[in-house]
Image (cartoon, rainbow, N blue to C red):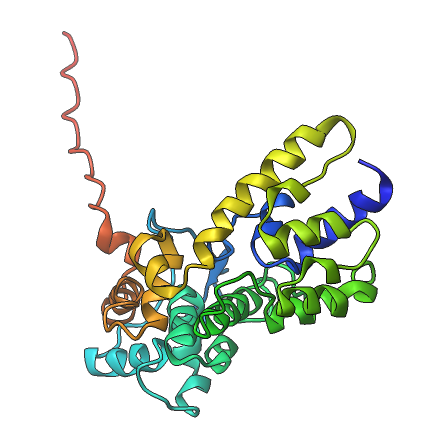
Length: 306
């Protein structure tokens, strides 16, 4: 791979400008909400360090070691309703307990952002797991990407698109910034001939047209690059079929979020259930889903021989 293309591939991995088809070419998952490593906070200030939140097989986060103080079911229901986008309460979104619950189960406010078509719910998540303002891979930005994706899908464009968040990240990239507006226009018009020339051209044309014949590669991994490009174009075709098809045939969080965008009442039910367990019992969601380990019975000391 020549140096220009190599830089471009790295930039695509960071800015996701070519919707999800080209994300796949850069090595990211297509058709799935970007995986994040959540940090489970505490509802009340504690000195214990935060605990990593793994994901359930279905893609939802589970609040492990969240340390929530037991809360009444009525209060928890109120928190979950606002985080799942079923009720609007700007003041409650700033409540420390609500913010703790959001961070422990980040897929819940993300699902809520899609449900309400409101980016504001993403504000309940931290800007990055370790603090600071890094955009790449942080919880808030991951939520915003999901919200923006399904915001566009509500419009049923029937073709690949670029979201406002992808365009924002593209413009923040030194390598991509000069080409962002031309790339965005190519997507908006659906015209691959409007893709900018240079190292980005063929991949832009492939993503805009969903035509695998535009896929190119170079160097010793050229065949792999072309294969991945073709594979992810095929996967991205599912996205262009719209919310109903994704809700019926999609996988993991994409399917759940498509249902949320369609207004299905149970779309965020899995995340809500996990959050309720952590909030009401003070126990971790992991403990609620997994049987407690049995403590081995004490062994009688062996009788000493005379």
